[in-house]
Structures are given as C-alpha cells and as structure tokens.
Length: 219
Image 1 (cartoon, rainbow, N blue to C red):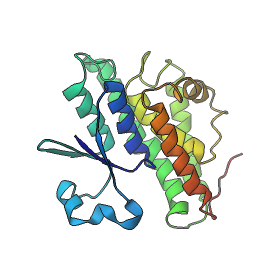
Image 2: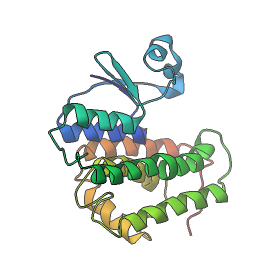
Image 3: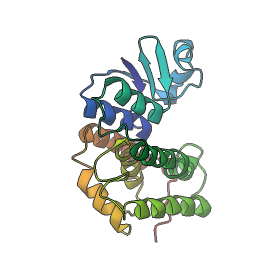
Image 4: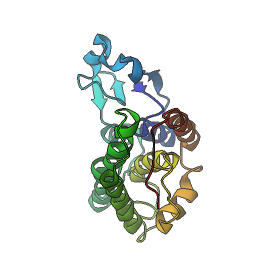
C-alpha cells in the first residue's frame, strides 16, 4: 500500500497510528504541500481533490483520513476488531466521535490556527471560542468513559489524539479540561504509533515557532 502523507498533518498521523495498531507496513510517500507537490499531475491522478492523506491499495484510491482508517480495519483488522467492532451501537458511537473530530474539533482547530499560520491573520477571538467549545464537548464525552467512545481504545481515540496533540503544541491549555487531560496523559505516549505521532507534532511545533505572528487567547 502506498501512503501519501506529511507528518505535520494530524489526519495523516491518525492513519499512521491506525496502521501501527494493525501491524501494517505502509509505503510512506512524503507530499511536500508547501512546494505544491499535491498539485502535480501524477498526484492529481491519484486524488483530484489534492489533499493528504491519500492511500493507494491495488486499484483502490482513497482519501479522507477517517475513511482510510475504517477501510484499514475492515480490510486488514481481525474479526470484530476492538478498534472498530462490528456491533452497530459501538460503531455508531465511534462514528459519531469521528464525525465530531472532523466537523467540530479538528475543523475549529484548523480555522483558528491556520488563519494565523498560513494566511497571516491576527488571532481571532471568535474562532478561539469555537475551539474552546469543541474542547468542552470532548471533556463531557470523556466524563462518561475511559476512552473517547467507550471503555477501550478505538479509531476515535487515534483520530482525536492526533488532533489533541497538535492543539497541545499550539499552546492551548488542556489542563483545565480534567477529563481530556486524564485521557491525554494516559495514551499520548502509549497508543499504537505514539512515537510517530509525537515526532510529527514536534515538527509542527517547530513550524509554529517559526511563525512570528502566532498568538493564543489562553485565559
């Protein structure tokens, strides 16, 4: 399998952690987004939406990190894999958390951070509050269970861990969210692929540190 990615990307790192959890070896191909490699004709043949992560497995070309994660478990995981079990109720909860990450937590993080880092805009208080609101919801979710979607590690944890480690490197205070902090300290260095996730997020921190106009509204 060919895996097109950049380690600075939280969604890419979520796929890496999923592969590690399944014991899969991916042929990792770095895509230099800053140089515009995602717009090259060869890459556009794979993914016309020119985004990472992207996966090629035989004749399958797949993108969107959470779709890739689910595919890897369904195709290569063991029967009723706890990462994404067959029970419709358990899957329903995992799916809800994955969609929450995509449509709320990661989305609000990206809008707040990327507006400063890539578009050189000043820190926006409204976008910051949206991110805080997403963190408050995650804190509520984790008040009911040890993990994000129940009592064992699932794809939802890996996807949200990739997001939360990036938020952490963005100097957002997570300590005030007791349930998030408990969960985060428990799995940040022990989840499958944690070392790869951490290395990637340290690269992201270096990128942020080189962005002189970055600011944060912590209070």
